[in-house]
Length: 242
Image 1 (cartoon, rainbow, N blue to C red):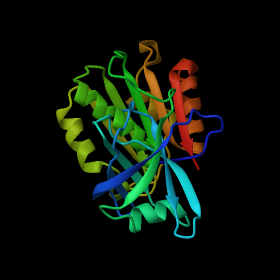
Image 2 (cartoon, rainbow, N blue to C red):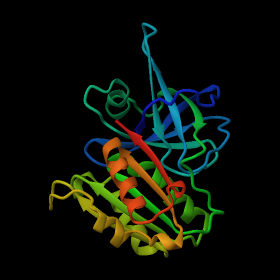
Image 3 (cartoon, rainbow, N blue to C red):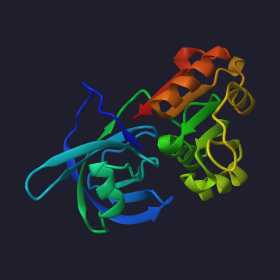
């Protein structure tokens, strides 16, 4: 998931990573596995800056969520192609195994989940906003955490579910993880509603941590729903793009 630039963030030095493998998630999204020597580690929910430099010296950079928990020098980024997006176009169509890329990070300390947190967790994703939430789901499994997780995932159609196969497997095999879907185009045409959040989320009196990620309008709508249902606004963490 690509994020907007945030002024005044803590900066770290640029490192050169190398693409080691690629996995297509959907027709327009792919996961990039990078080897980044001396990577300092990260927490689920953080992101990195990616910088490209053209032969003529022109540079472009974007921020992308990390799709998996820390694993040595290995990073996973899941990038959704954006029409006229100069960085996403290169990363999803041209970037090949063995090619270098500059990365900087990790960035962010607010929208994160740590396996030491025992309270219930509600994850609400819109489109590629599922990427940092998937890092949390994977971190939970890797740590053997028993924190109960619920994911509500809104996508345009079943074919556009990023991590669709893995989520189906995890919903079956990862005890304490529940996954529900809302499709905005097919097989049904509906937007996420207060009833969806109420039915598939956690009651406010359990004081869950809530993480909402997706396009700006989606995030604002869901955050308002959670507050209307009685959730403490301080426990509703949001990340948005677009």
